[in-house]
Length: 516
Image (cartoon, rainbow, N blue to C red; front, side, top):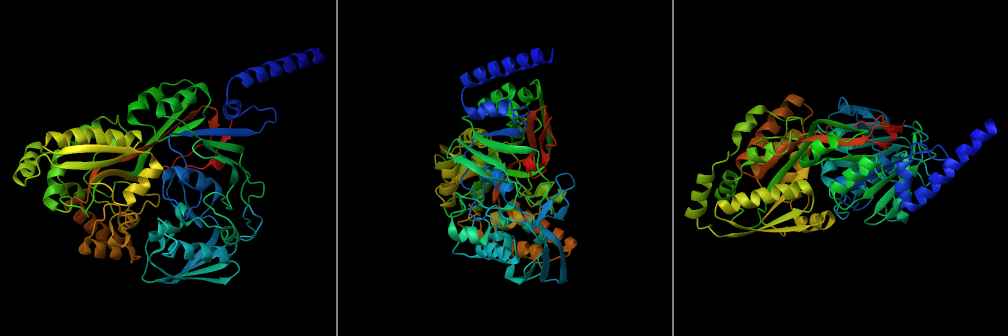
């Protein structure tokens, strides 16, 4: 009897292998049978419509690359995905002997994937490189307040700031402040060959197709259940959802509002949704005329019906005039009254009276569904107001380069605000220190800068709240951005995926996941 049962099992495995061999790529086969492979090792496939730009935490600044980087690298501190509380990760503890000094003690015995031990020298090297203007790091602003980093001893780092810096722990919990190996960075290009302390390491990267990470067998923390995970690039969101439905893909996130009901109706698929920190907006290029004129920005703001746009998001967006969103520190409800409401007649009148009727605007858009939807709606509304709008779309990596170079009149962007801190929203995006970098609008207002600086250089949270609120209202009245919406974070996954947690910042970690 036992031999008969074994024969039946063997035949079933043989048939399954033949069918799998006829079904297409091996990646799909692996993900579809990931919870019951012949070795019993668990895998997972995540799908996204945009390719990874690079794998260095210092040299990237996009959510797609961050998805992979956060599995390979780690930060000194981390946010709890449920409470948003900041806790030590690579750090063991810290103290602040005075308002300008942060003493951080590292956990001992942690190794990078190249076999070298994490020490204070690696932390110093990471932060010095991130801050160095010659590096050209997109998020150098995270540590712009730092005056000096010292490796006091093998496991102790001392950070001296120019002024008291309130969001320090939030900055150190950001993926761009992930600790890199000094030795590895001096030998290799970490954009292509990442070396971190995280639970996973790079196995394979086929540019434009997929990135596969595999378990780091020397990981210092709890052993993750998943052996491997593939970050797969798919042509469009419809393909991603269809692959989720068939089991070729196990996880997707950032689900477009137009597809939310469809995804919720899928069998053997679970969904999650919660308020997030992300803001989506339309930005003006302040280096060009008439975008540099407040009355023009007002006219454009009056022409855009954002309420109508948010209604189309099927509950996945929150309408707001405020740049700082309700889930971000520094928000005050009174900021909602500082913006410009939809008034198409006023918009038309201002455009005609100022000689802008028929003016052609170059609208630069990344070819992602949410941005394209915003662009098409706004394009129609601005043309109704008397402007001509030429829409130019491009893939994400190219868009980042072109928008940083200022080759647009108006554009659409988003900011995930992974720190959850208002200072780290306003400073990188709108402070003049970051013009022609992360401040793609090239917004420049000295009063705004002073308030943002005051919010950053105080450890008094009440003072920080006051300064952030004041700065926020100035930028709103300046129409620095037209806020399209504050987002909900969403994800969908096969029902055998357990332990998945997504934070309000839309971050998630493979190490929390297992297959049932």
